[in-house]
Every structure is written in C-alpha cells, then in structure tokens.
Image 1: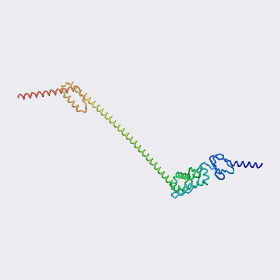
Image 2: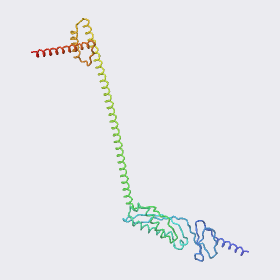
Image 3: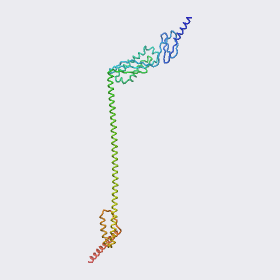
Image 4: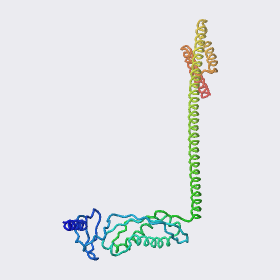
Length: 328
C-alpha cells in the first residue's frame, strides 16, 4: 500500500514538472538532453520527463537599460561624463540565447565604445548641441551590431552630459553674459520703440496744432474778407444815398429858383442866363447825377435855337459880303 502511494506521488510530481505554461509576450526554449529542441510559444506545453527541460523563458517586450556614466573625450580634448539609456527588444529568442553569453553586458560595452567613437569626432560645443545626431548614429550602429544576437535597438538617448567643473563654471559665465547681452538688447529696443512712439506723438501733435492754426487763420481771413466786403457795400450804399439826397436837394433848389424867376416875370434871356449859372454851380459839385427840371431842358432848347439863329445870321452876313465883292 505504501509503495502504491509513493508511486502515485512520484507520478503527480513528474506530471506537474512536465507541464509548463508560457505567459503572454514570452517565449520558452525547450532543451532535450542539453540540445535545443524547440521554441515554446504562449500556452501549455508537455515535456518528456527526464529528457526535456524548459531551459529559458525570454521576455519579448521592449526592455530599458540605464547604463552608468561613461568617461569620453571630445575632439578638443575635454573629458566629460555621459550616461545613456538604451531601449531594445528581443526579436529572435533562439539567437538571443545561443549567440551571446551575456547580452546586457555586451550591449553596455558596445554602447560605451560607440559613444567614445562618436564623441571623439565632435568638439565640446557640437557635443552639447548635437544630441539628436548622436542618438541617431548610436541607434543605427547598435542596431546593426546586435542584429546577429536577435536584438533590435529601438532607441538610444543621452541622459546626461556632464562637462568638467571648470568648463561648467565657464559655461555659466558665458550664459550669464549672453543673458545680460540679450537683456541690454531688449532694453535698447524698448527705449528705441519708446523714443519712436514719443517722436510720432510729438509729430502728430505738431501737425494737429499746425492744422488748427491754419484753420483759425483761414477763418480769420474769411471773416476779415466778409467784414471788408460788407463795409465796402455799406460805404457804397451810403455814398449812393448821399449822392441821391444831394441830387434831389439840388433839383428841388433849381425848381424853386425857376419857379421864383417865373413868378417874378423875368424875360427868357435872363432866365436862361441864370439857369446856366445855376447849372454851372451844380456841375461843380461832387454829385455824379443831375436831375434837371423840364423848364431847364426847355431853356437849353432855347439856347440851341438861339445858336441856330446866330449861325444863320453869320451865313447871311457872309453871303452879303460876297455879293458886294463881286459887284466891285
């Protein structure tokens, strides 16, 4: 009975040890008598007792390895410390197990040598400003070198670049000087813009003042012009009114004189003579218009008739003289 129990226990133990479960994103390597037998994918696998062995279980997910800082020398002989981070993934578990003994150590050493080679071709300033270039070159070189190991390098990053202490102090001074220079430039630009805006404001103010002064002068000139026009019109109207009144007054005087002469029964010749004297005095005045009564006009007609009679008398006298001369 005891033997049966022991046999059952041994059978159970062997069955449990011969059943292997491979989880998601992992791959098992089955060895039979020390030789690679097969690759066990995700799922349940039964092994032959005492012959098969699940020797390795490889994780197919991306792995991240942070390597410690490595001393490197730049092209201009500056020694600095650089630590790197490598992202890699196993693509071929068989080669990963059988082609390289210690993959992580191999990747670390390969990263260090590759980093030294790349940094040795760059000076300090290029090293500090060319992270992307360095990362790209390292990823390409490492991926090509680890491909035969069943490893794919997805990305390489420079985590820290630490120059010597004296270089750091000099860089800080340079950065401080650069910041002060930029501050001075910005301050000068601000003052320049302020001066420009102030000058523009003064210019606009002067223009507005000049425009206002110009407008005031124009309006003042227009006012003076209108004032002079109105004054001239008033003076002309006043002169016309005075002349009209004076002419009307002189006309009234002449009419009264003629009326008085008629009432005094003065003969026509005397009346004409007095009329002419009166007209002469009137003509010597400042009036530009003369209003003559009808009687004065008649007297002027009388003078014209007298002139014609005197002209006829002169013609008769000339004809008589001519006849006498002819008779002699």
